[in-house]
Image (cartoon, rainbow, N blue to C red; front, side):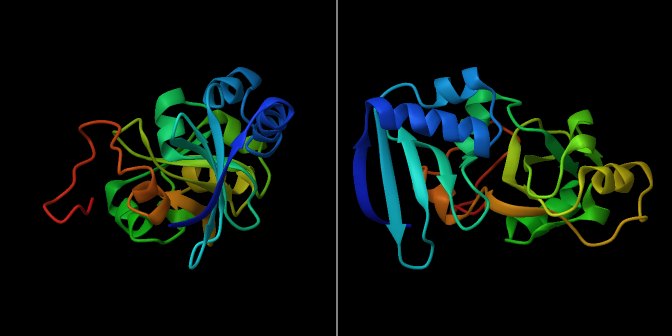
Length: 193
């Protein structure tokens, strides 16, 4: 990511960012306040990936690329735990997501109970079965009820389940200085996951 500009966020603007995080990313008030407590900066990028990144103490916590609204970064999710509803996929499906694909409904093997009530466009995270740390964040491309049906009746649903906005290994993750949440993630000698 090429950072085009960076500006400090203070006072009233900081409170607006917390409110927007609650509204757009649907984060609980206390989580949004913790993620944005400290020295805040707004970074805007240019070039191939144009987005807005809100950093706290130099660590990207929230981002907005495209039409999905403000979403938490992976380091923010790892720091705060289960602040977004989660979808679960097997390792076989995760390799496609880690290479830049959206998650298809047949690849969903589990979901949090809260997913059923969500509508298209709701923010969610993606975990690989057996690892509680999120590997991606995005928005639902199908209704929560369709996602739940894909879990309870495998093969009954077709199409995209999760439109991925940020994944381990992408440009935003590299901008976050390539953090890894636990031993379930490993980099090879080239720096690839």
